[in-house]
Length: 190
Image (tube, rainbow, N blue to C red; front, side, top):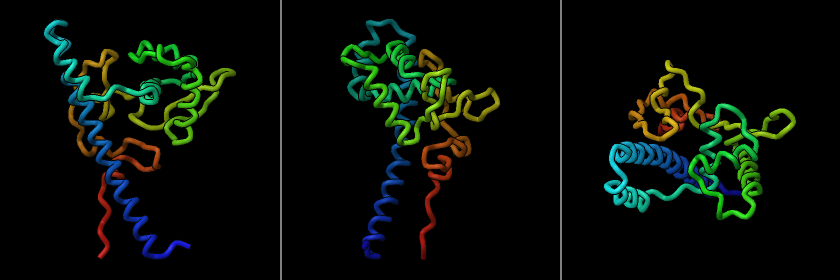
């Protein structure tokens, strides 16, 4: 049986974890915005001048992992994708599969994990199992949507504007609340 003091400690840890999760979301967004800005500026120059800056950028920003690459492809797709389609799109998205002996098995494992965490859901595409994202920026975003300017073009050259707090309020997430609701600090009990 969990005692009242243990319950208080657990609730405090959950509160800390929620706060850290919020901070990570904002830090990831800011890092992505800054990296996109640097890459957009560097895209205007020739390769010889740019290489030292790209090397510095690669030293700071950790390379994208397999799960992150699959997650990014799902989030950027307007339709459900099968594991075979994901395997075909990964190299075009800049993720090399040469180090993987059986990338399709890894993709299946990643997709099952994303379904389990609520980041993707299983749908039928014809007679095949496909996966559709459930969190992140809603797609497609129309020109009248407040987050329309946050979309990055296929070459990754757009510098997104900083979000307004109201613009972030409606972003869904896997916890069943909006980002705006998550970012609100709970009122302290007296």
